[in-house]
Amino acid sequence: SLERLIGSISLTPLTDNLSLRLLEANGKAGNIGRSLSLLNLRKSRGYKPTTKEYEYAIQSIVSAGLHLRKDRNLFVDEHNQPEIDNPTRWLDAILVNMSGRNVPLDTWTANRMLHCYACTGRSGKALHFFYDVKRDYMDVEEDEEEEGVDVNVDVGVDDGEEDKSDTVTDERTPTQKLKVRMKIRPQLPPFYKIPSDVKLNREMVKRRGKDEIFSTKLEWEKEKDWSPSLTAAFAFADSLTHGACGHAPIKLDVSSWNTLIKASCYRGAIWRALEILNDTMPRNNIEPDIYSYNTILAALARLGDKDFMREMLTAMTNKGIISDKCTVQALVDGYLNAGDISGAVTLVQDMWNQHHVLPPYTSHLKIIEFALATELVYEAKRHVYLIQQLMKWKPSPEDSNRLQKFMYITQRNPKLSRKSLQQLFSYFGETLTEEDFF
Image (tube, rainbow, N blue to C red; front, side, top):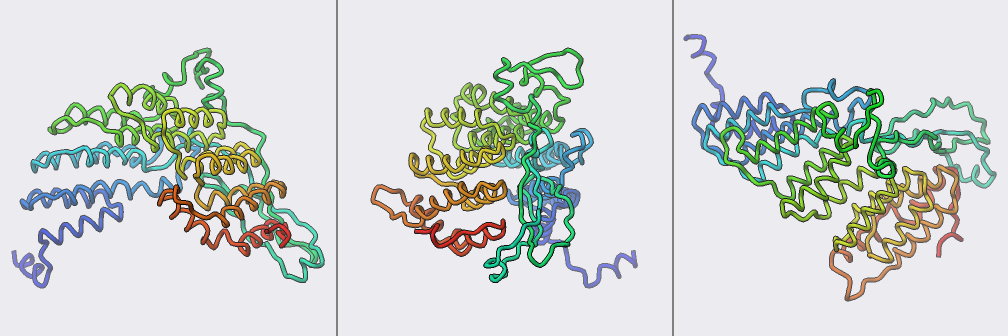
């Protein structure tokens, strides 16, 4: 007792407000265990519950999944991934704490919980490596040598790609420099990954590892062995609709189903996502929105399935859903991954002319980079011509405020300026002259 008395001298008492602030800090840091301990401490001391403390506890799960979003080992089976890939037990602990303190579960909090299943990044089933980045030596022209152009820098790769370029030692002569080039891999994604190929085969696929057993791709994706995390996500969502951990049943809304679509796409279960989009949501009198389609388009882009992406775009247009910048970004990524640089340039032009919608500025730069790295200088300059047209665009009374604001930001983006574009061309060993501008 004496030691406890001495140890408590000059210590800060853990008050209601301090415990809430500690819960916030641990939530942002991804300390799940400490966050749940603080929740139980607040419960034992009878502190008045708030919505924020459960938001912080859920955030701890999202933050803890950051390393999987960035450094997931795509070559390891999902059964051997870290525990954070299936956060059900921590979510159940939060629900039990809420029930014990008579805090009702609302749809917004339930959606935040479902999001934990889609915050750990894409698995190997949802990705394919389409290209390698190489660096080659080239002779420098005399005028370039005088300008001191040098591109001897390391090259990054696209999101989700590995930098598998060979290590280049700087053994160049004074009249040489490094030239960045991209090599498209001849290997296409496996047949069962590409929805358009599966659709041509009446949606029947041969099960990998199963001798002479065929089934629909949707049936395969619904099996527990396809993805334990995805199976847990659907089981958790189903438990919410029946009353989980003593809570009243809730009804899933469009955000709930969009989260399940995202979780399915991140685990390579595109047919399951399509079932939600085309069957489950209409059966529950819920209309898919732009986020539903954009999520699936982004998943298709990772596989370079241009044909199915065009079908999705047509379905969106027929239903009166207006495309946005994320729609065009996903379409551009899909065309570039498929190696269709010319099609990507034309796509951006068509989407602007027909729908007055553009992708983010990073997509413009990505198109130019892909074109230059594959030695399609004409296509790169064709897209530069489009950028110049956008720079001369002037608003009209019929244009929405959102479009005017977006174009205002695009026209003043320093990354799309003449100087930046010239530097980008020189990085790839090409020249963008004054004659290429108007």
